[in-house]
Amino acid sequence: MAEIIGVSTWILAGFRWGDWRNWHKYHATILYFILGDVLYYYITYNYRLWSLNPTPPLTTELVCLVGEFLVFTSTILIYLRRYPTGHFISAWWTSLWVLIYTANEWLLTLTGTFTYDNGWTLFDSFLFNILMLILLRLHNIKRLFTLILSIPISIILIILNSIPIK
Image (cartoon, rainbow, N blue to C red; front, top):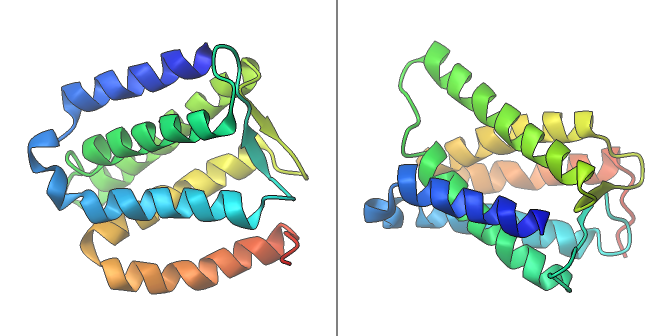
């Protein structure tokens, strides 16, 4: 139930503050975000760092992933639409979103909808959220550069977290 409430809240926020009229401007970054998530689940299939756990009435992880994709779409449509100019205010904006994402994850851990494994912690997620939101902004303005940059970053994260690759 927590997942349904959370996803519904994100969808409502997306409709309220998101730039749906110009969704095509953010389409590539939405796909980049979703691709990163799908690759995480594929690469870490046998060695998860974090997991969504379906809670009733949801019964499969696939349904949870669909919810994630809706949250990611809303995130991009709000975060990038309102991304400010100026270094100080843009750093503040990104920091606010890091806190939103980290607090959201913390609430999901309290409900048992989200769990950590293999040494991953909320602090690791906090650091990852910083990296993720910076990359999402960068992808929106320099797509090819961000895609190329994501490869060594992913390899470093795999090595740092001792994720076995088969």
